[in-house]
Image (cartoon, rainbow over all chains, first blue to last red; front, side):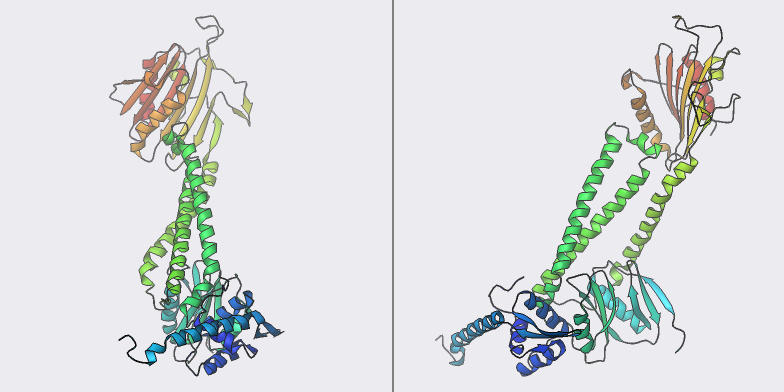
Length: 106
Length: 399
């Protein structure tokens, strides 16, 4: 299923986020844990699935391929999608203000 | 290192039941049997120390798994074991800190997309093939309305077994397509694969079907050859032989009768005076014979030429007596060329379970059965019907 600009899965979002700095598969898992402050521990299966799908969709590309180890980077299209998603998430947060203010419905 | 010993085991359930295979591999590893290779029906294990292992089966989009995928998994503590079709098995000791392969079921559902497509395609093709075959079988059996005859002659035995085989294939491919589609849907909804799915549930049924299947396929391969080997045609001996067939001389009762040497000789067989032996599963003994004689000096009443009576016999020894009546019906349908099947008269005779006769000028036909034996005789000559029936009665006792 090609990415159509809709809400991203958490896995997609964090892989794109981590790939703001080019990285390769195994290292990426740690980068994601780091960038999420230990909240997201992505399994290698999920990571590989997301990587191959987003590469097909043109959101990421190969920066380097020295035979065994592939290094991925985010594409302009990918960064655009990430920023759009970030904007959407920010709007979500903004809309959730009422939860912070307490009894907003009274 | 001691001698490593290989153990083969029949796979406990259908190849697409991922969770059941994973739990099966784990249970065996705990008993010291470590998976090495997975084939179509058998898995190969190596005997070693019992170990608590986790097994995970990955489905790849392409048939081959990418080396990059294997690398990422191995770096995370998952060792690649073996592949079958687009299924790839990885293992990791239970006490290792290797992370679960899939932390997001919805993402995992994408990995099943290609397999889902392929299985749906297979199921459609298999179903279409089965429908075509059923149509063909139906035509062979029922087009001329003599299904018992066709079955007894044995020509469609292999096709019948083959269509059962194809039917089963269509059924399993449909099952595969449906269950992978369901799994994909479940994953999408966030339900992860049960890595401890009970495999024993399908084990007995699966191995029984596998056994029956091998047996049926073997049989269908052997039967046509066996039929060919058993089938034989020879020139009928002049002397009354041990064959359970009605002889022309016994019906004619005329010492002046001599054999009319046929003009049709082939492979050293006189096809005008021959007997053919055949075997089939439903009628292990079958004879078909022709015999022609002449009485020198005697002419047909219409002076059309020398009197040359002939006889044609078909004898069946059936496996099931219950088929006899239907076979007689079919034989009548097949032989009623210039008259209607309704013109064949049922008569009473203590020597037979069923006897039906037809007489038209010089041609007398008898369709008779007793127990598992069915005899059809068509006699053309001046001897009377009674004489033909008498001889059939004698031969029916032969078995």
